[in-house]
Image (cartoon, rainbow, N blue to C red):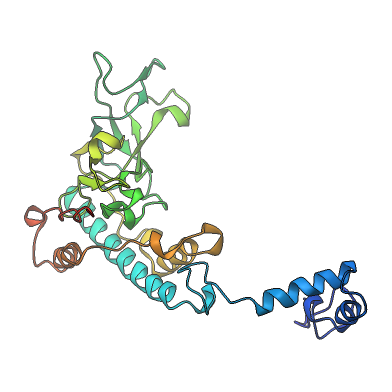
Length: 284
């Protein structure tokens, strides 16, 4: 397509049509269907006659662009993402999590100031303490709060802390990633695997067992992660064709969990009143 928006055919170089609808291609097909361009045109004709199959819902009769399921899922995904971010920021304010917060991790892998590597479970393991120095990671996803999703067990960093006494180390050794912790009613501790078997998130996920020792000086309520523009981009990126998302991959909050999250945001209930949702019953 040229700068003025006019289609130019790569076969005959004429404007107003593309290669697949080129009259020259059609003439060659009519003259000799077995020729190179004749076979190419025949493949195009066959594709046009073939029934359309949606790459998202796998139903026939429409494509991904006209799929009702993906439109509905995008809208719900947007609503869930917005709710989750509002919930998480409120929880962070109440817990004292912000830039400069002092936190202690019980399951972090880290280097000490002598460049020795420490792994949870080692004899004499000392839980590292550090300062939160980063904003909320852009990869933080509301699927982490849904027990039936793969992301629920993800080790993706939520925040990063710089361990105390590590200033002499290079950045990649003094900074320790923190995953989303288990938060009753927000990030369920128990999840399910592909076969519906219960899994303890604290046993599967590293970097999720940490606590605030001293509150931070700056909260995250004005960070880019909360903006409508960022949420809209997250929806677009998640459902992009190259991500190969299908209808069966879509997850949303159970009704009871969504209701509880809304009540928490609206101040109807407080954090101590929140409970984890029950896992879906395993199919027999």
